[in-house]
Image (tube, rainbow, N blue to C red):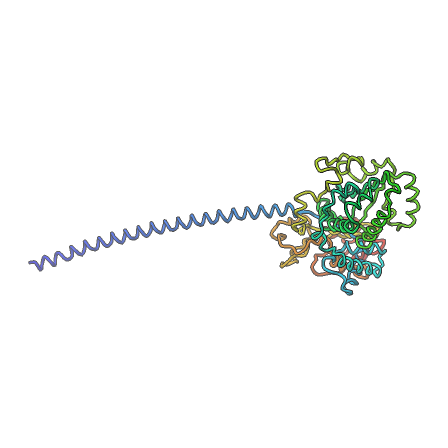
Length: 465
């Protein structure tokens, strides 16, 4: 009996156990589903957080790019003469052969200034260039901005009022000297001749390192010369002591030998009859090209100055409206684009390296025959995509947003290679072909010819086949 009961009981117990197992499995399955859903939810949340962070990061980067683009989308117009371009390239090759071209001096406009100073005689310009390189080594010019401090400047300005103030209407810095207020004897009591000369050289170096680049960015055109105003009211023999003559002679030699062609124009104002008589004699000993840059004016000079300099950029004592009262006067203020924090940051931090250079080449008639937007050479990237033929391309775009190796607003190699010895444009690496300007003379030729390689830039013509 018990055996039968056992037999009947077994299935009963087995069924009960199977139901329990199924319930347990179901419970386990539900638990695993809950865990899976929890894990999926957690993963989704992490993914959303990561996505949000990524988007936020992209926005920040995009913001930085937009900011960079806003700063760096400056287009610098650089107009070059076709014949001068060939002359500079010939000069450059000659300097390279004689190992006289350090990388920092491989600059189109710098070489052009030396050529102009020697009337495009390459051998004479090369001798002048070699002397300049040697002088810089001996004088310590390359480090003078860092290792020389002119602490007596404020005292010096009392006895020799001078300084940069504003820009002319074309964006060049304006340099002013009030020669009638110079007291040579007291000047030499607060400084020495050698220290003043070092200060003078340091100021020239600051011009090329800071002032000219800042003016270039502000004006959106290449600037490497200044407009000078010399106020000679009250100038007499008392101003020309032996020490004053020696100082002027040494400064003129340094300027002429090492910083040639940096004067755009000069206005000598308040010139009396005596000075005019003196000038008529001195003028005969000055290079005619230089003499044409100098304008000798009497006491009614204001309108002439205001033709080239805006009243807001001109000191009140010269007929303008600026006083710089909060900065100790106009000649103490050093007013100019180089004082603009954003522009100064661009110059000092190298952000100006991204500046888009629009090189325009003129023929002998002064017509623009070709224009080419140019970006500086890139570091560690493909230059073939960096130099766009379109001025409208956003420099902050991924295509253009790269690291730049130098701030080179003035390359010479590529353009000069484009103009062969026969005057024809030839192909070259590293540049897209020049983009013809919308000009009737150029346009009519470009319709006839398929490639700019066949175009001439010959004297007296715009573009001949």
